[in-house]
Image (cartoon, rainbow, N blue to C red; front, side, top):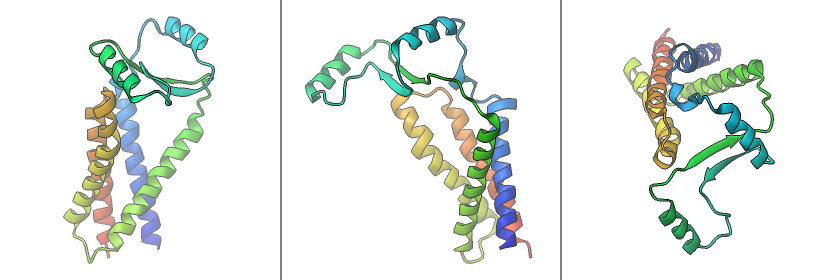
Length: 181
């Protein structure tokens, strides 16, 4: 049990550290949070348009619209601008709480990896590393890539690198740690 706990904590820290490097020092995700010099004007306008927090896709139609209305909107929208806006009425960033939640999430994911590896018959270092990378690829493909396919996200390459590096590094640690006698 001690081996699992230490493995999960260190694996979680490694995964969280990669995310920190990716989003801050290396700034791989810069394209996903691009700056516009017109941000004040845009925010002032959005504040007059939205009454609640939400993610808004434009152009769009109300849910109860007919299939014909959706098709007409798709045809009319071809070649024209579109936007996906995540809007929040209040900026209430709690960096400390977010760091703790992110780190705990990574620790839980590392513990889940350890559980998977514990069900294998004496996995090799390479099996643990490759399995970790494959799990990173599965996560990337089902979340970031799926979103990119529909909404053309700008940092898809960075998200791919995160899936490989984050879980590859965690897998390297776990491959060494779990096989120690």
